[in-house]
Image (cartoon, rainbow, N blue to C red; front, side, top):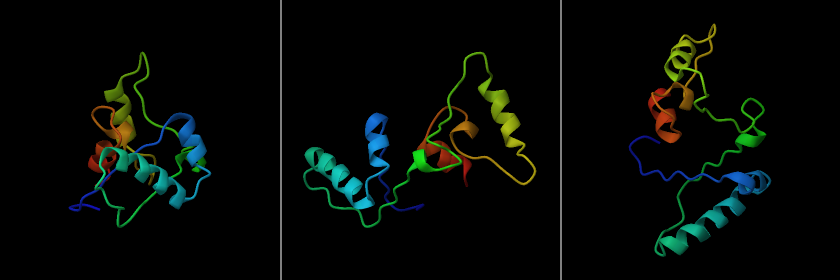
Length: 108
C-alpha cells in the first residue's frame, strides 16, 4: 500500500475483544458510523484489511512495550540478529515505541 492514501484505525479494550467475533462488514459499519460523525462527507474505503490479533495464535493480541529495568536499545539490537532464518520487524525493532510507523519502517 505504499504511495496510496491509507487510513489506519485501532479498536482497543473490551471493544477489541468483541470485534474479534464480528464480520469485516460489521466492523466496517461501526467504524464508518464513527467516522461519519466526525467527517460527514467521508466515503467508504475501496479496500479494507481487518486483522484479529487476539485470535492470531502466534501473537495473541501482543504488542511491544518498554519493560522496567530493561534496555530497549540492547533488546532491539539482540532481536536484530534474528534466530536462524527468522527475522523480526515492527514495534520492538523501532527506535521508540510505535505501531504503524514502526511496522512500516522496519518491515521494508
